[in-house]
Length: 232
Length: 232
DNA sequence: ACGGTAGGGATTGTTGAACAATCCTGCAAG
DNA sequence: CTTGCAGGATTGTTCAACAATCCCTACCGT
Image (tube, rainbow over all chains, first blue to last red; front, side, top):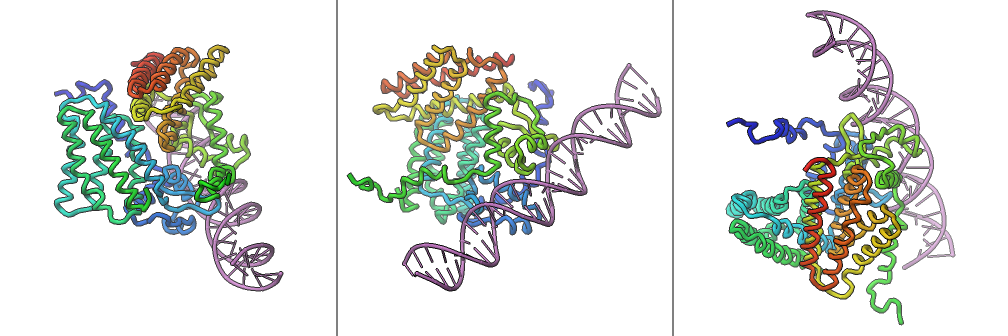
């Protein structure tokens, strides 16, 4: 079989390897480090990030640190108050409401416009089994990340890099919410069955039913999270 | 009548005035200027933006310019190639495809979940009449911006600041596309009737029909733009 | 004539230091 | 208890410098 049989341009394969070639700037690497520390919960919500300590800790210039911080502020992971510095975002009830408002628009809409076909739900199924495996192993954190993979896979069905990026931002905010609310395990566990159901409906060739299931499921998840915040 | 009768905190009124208090940083103002110049077409696609000339032109430091440029790169208005500088983004056919992919997910989904009620379509109607007025006055540019107002108003129906922001980014990319394709007048004019139809369906209490109209309409618009790009 | 190769200039990436503006803290005075 | 005021700390912004990289051009060998 000719590897280039069904590809218009044989260089297309190389385009996906570009991130490895394009040398990332120092500020980007600093942003990556901070993003990771926040995503994994080492930097809690509200933590103030002073510039000078970051410079010495990461051995980069203050200007580079500021560039990285501005980038993360743009992603809503950090919050900047003028002349007072930046701190890790502290999502409040209104943030949760809006993130779920956006997700309930985005995710069901992607499902609804999926054209049924063989293996359309492949990535969803992989995320579901990943979640089951983590649950069986008692790995609460693994259940959480499997859940994120599931929702990322849902949006990825649209095949739109822009929507993928938007979803990544929303999920990053969700991670902050989960860290803020405490133990994320019991929040993700009950939704394994919902993921399973959505996946099954999609595999069964009924995207609209899958979308309606997901919409209802997201509504319940938002309610549960909001009650955990003490508000409604 | 006590002005503070039904408000828990009388300071709530002041919260909406915060943007006037929060002094914007110099980099933000520089970014605003560049964004405006690009949106109005004074800086065409592909134009290289060197840092030093921008410094002298705007009388700010190179560092501040770099911060503004990074911000606009994050908004996909500029494109940075490492060690080669930034230039105004040149949307290609794949960009148009993806932006419309995202819009066809976003906009109909917002319409579909609108709960009919009195004056839900108020902002849409305002944008439609704005478009008619501009068309009658022969103001092609006005038709274009009225069109943008219409689609912004559609997404605003969701009431989600995050979706509003995402839509603003997509529309900024669309402006680049229109400037790139040449005269935008004849591209917007035929869609006035479509806007009118969508608005009418929504006013008639049938959001789903409005969503389906809009989806079809966006599909046709994408096709027209892509053929203008010489590709399909 | 053609492709490869070194040099020089221009531009970006990054650093370090400096200064003004602003904010926070603690303390004294009313 | 609140107000006003130093003093220190932090941020916002500028400037100057250097290394790294890129672009362009002239040169050279085949």
